[in-house]
Length: 173
Image (cartoon, rainbow, N blue to C red):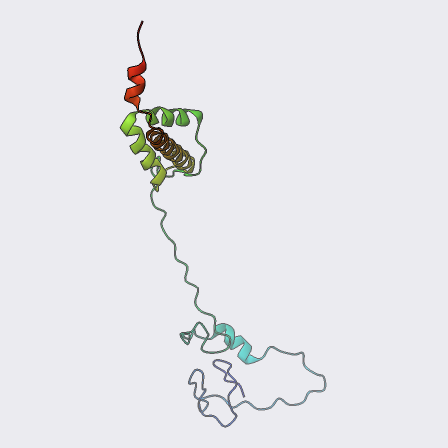
């Protein structure tokens, strides 16, 4: 038989429902319907209506329902949007204009400040992606130039050519 409260299938000789604890002693006895001359249209079973109106049961703790037909309650949380201030919504992937590239090149020409700004732009979290890539490429060029300068000095020393001897050979007539 089925529990009229929750619709769970329980043995016929049970006094209580295993799912919801409903007492069958207080339930109205259901008698078998009298045979009719015409077959009655198939009605929806009483337990199916109970599923829609059954109280919400807690889950078993592993994401599975405690009883068949259990639907967890839907909690709708409305979050207030944070206030938006002018300039706070910055798109870090927006393309840079020509003026931005010109200003970066101008700042890069300042001897120590330019190098520090390249480091800041290259490794900052809040820098525009294009500015980061430009600064990283410029730092790579600086490293290549530094490597070539060191290499040329080493080659000159290995060849025995010094800058002092080259300056001494220049004569003014």
